[in-house]
Image (cartoon, rainbow, N blue to C red; front, side):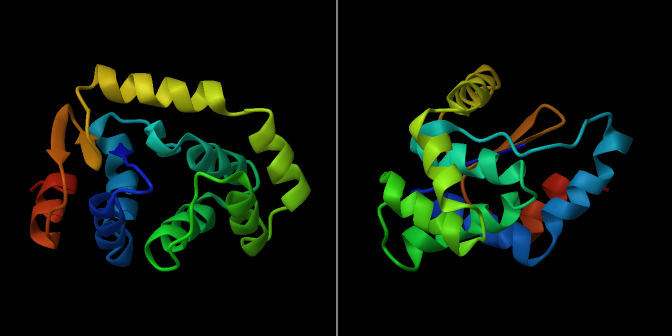
Length: 155
């Protein structure tokens, strides 16, 4: 499980490290062999509306695209993802219906799911992002490729 905050630079760097080398994909593929059930990434809601948009995007098969676009909006474009209009712009950029995205964010459709994810993270002992949790072990903060490889795909 990858717990993150969209405005945390270490979360952004760890996400890039994981995605650029396909390590998260490798780890998810190995999940059934480890007795884990792969699925949506649980997200901790320090940036709740952004996490809600990612869950909405998942319903349309665009979770990864929106997830990365939110990080780019913050760290490459300096946009305020605490604003619904900014998140609707991200949705539009990722080919989601902006009216539907605005409605979903406005009515807190995914608020309970995001709060459940937060509760799960806290129950697992995660208090600060980024954090990876796998096989009951935690990897907190940013780590280089070798450490990630060892954590995600142990010998």
